[in-house]
Image (cartoon, rainbow, N blue to C red; front, side, top):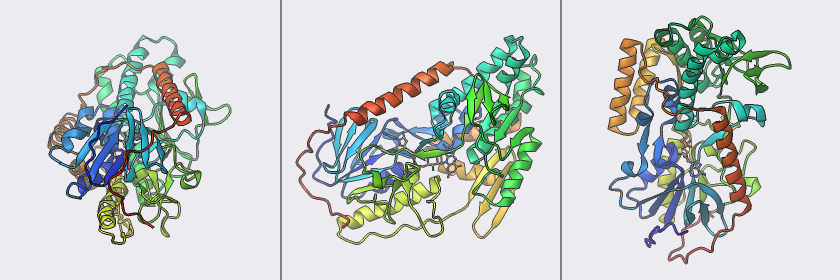
Length: 462
Ligand SMILES: Cc1cc2nc3c(=O)[nH]c(=O)nc-3n(C[C@H](O)[C@H](O)[C@H](O)COP(=O)(O)OP(=O)(O)OC[C@H]3O[C@@H](n4cnc5c(N)ncnc54)[C@H](O)[C@@H]3O)c2cc1C
């Protein structure tokens, strides 16, 4: 299949992934003398930090996504193909996708990350995750489906499992979703389900380490725990879920929490695209890059954002998987690609940490700023709201999010409780099975066609 991308006579920069990093880079190259080709399997940019709000009915899915083509309306050097990238061939300067091969002069991998189930099959098959909009909508449907089911259930043990929710992972995502679920249980659900006793509904957050919010300050860790416990969340630290089957989340051989809903937010790996030499891929499936985001051993392949394993003296385990890292790397890479085209030396990346934050519930958030500044509570919550509103793509999305938030703030009643697309565990297993089979086939049969004759050579990073 031909992807029909016109030959422009300018060097072609192919960007795989239109998340935070890919989107910013493509925008920053608007006036550069290059052809920009963005490839993403979704035709929208997804604002991941608000996925948990979609999962808990606080925000509409449409308000955290924006059509890629609309974002780039009017950008003359921009081309987009909706495609799943399945492999790359550094020798031939080609990527292989489900709609055909695409030639590049410069390739930028910005594919983000995937949930890491740490090889535990029972969890991978049965747990929910929140990495995409479909995932978040599935969680929302599943929770309400289970509540409807609980009404019909006479067996006390099964009923308890239908009511309980276990969130695994005490990072920002785990903290945010468990706080939001507790708030929904405390304020919203009793109105909708007066026949259910919500004293019985237990929400757990389970974390293998000794504290929540591992990378944040001790003050933030303690505040988050205090906030969650005040909401009635059961915080289980130094506890790892090892197995999940038959609605039982086991944290030792014999001890388990009965739950029909286990949300796995315990870790991520890089979403590496097959085709790079093994040496370029780190243990966490992130791609080793140097200070210019150039992939180890490559001349014209870069990686940015969550996928890029960039090690610094301050962060020997690699820069954190956060939106600001992806944005800042995209900014510098846009400049560096233009420097390369002018035969100038590229600049080295240095991460500017503007601070980190996590929200627990309304009026309750924790914020750590550089130089040890920490604050919490209403001011933290306002900061969180303001930053997320600014970062949301599209004016309409900002307005819709603001209206949804204002409505739930003043009415303490999220409106989005529809089970639009009923969800089953079998569906989850089928989807996962299909994707792994596709990936395996794509990797095994990867055999790109020879590259088109290129009219100009790109300057290389020697
Ligand atoms: C639930 C959740 C909450 C978060 N909260 C915060 C927060 O509060 N603050 C913060 O700073 N960060 C947060 N993060 C992390 C932040 O979202 C990431 O650091 C950021 O999205 C990384 O940007 P990226 O460009 O590297 O990748 P992404 O934004 O993940 O984008 C990757 C893109 O690549 C596409 N893609 C992947 N593989 C392929 C392929 N093979 N073919 C085609 N397309 C592909 C995907 O469709 C996607 O559009 C959160 C993440 C999650 C999941």
